[in-house]
Length: 202
Image 1: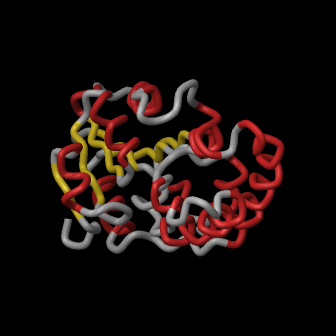
Image 2: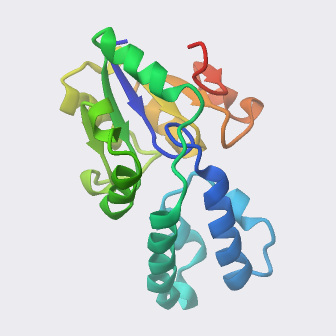
Image 3: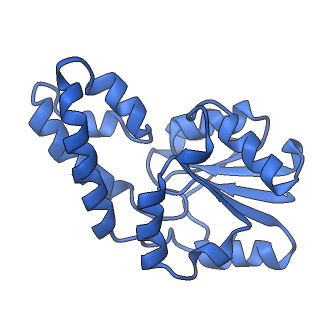
């Protein structure tokens, strides 16, 4: 491994339960006929969620939901997945390059930086939704991250938790480590080279 590429939510930060709360409230308001929808859309980008569930007559409600989401993300608790800080600092001490590759946008990242002033110093690059032409599961984001770091694809390891993210890493031709923070180990195993629950002892 010459480069470690990390998704953000569910991989660096244990935020997925908080997103389930947010989307649960939106889904109950706009899709009361589909209980549990918030669990089905886990790991999808905002564009993907909107295209699948908030298009047509609900398109006009998208700005309201986006505004609510932006406010919610400003107040979220960004707690590291257990063992992450030690793990990433250990990689950097060994000369491994590190990057965040996330579908999150810059306004959300500002909230992250405010919550964790040390965050940017832990990575050689931080790529957000503004950097990509195509969303996960397309490999575009991970291929761009490897290029940004100047590392060959076969020397990169992807850390992901969502199905789309895992597919993205695999489509990029990289070694994929799946975190069972969002979905069960059994569910993600077919899309991973390795499954972990956290970074303790890694």
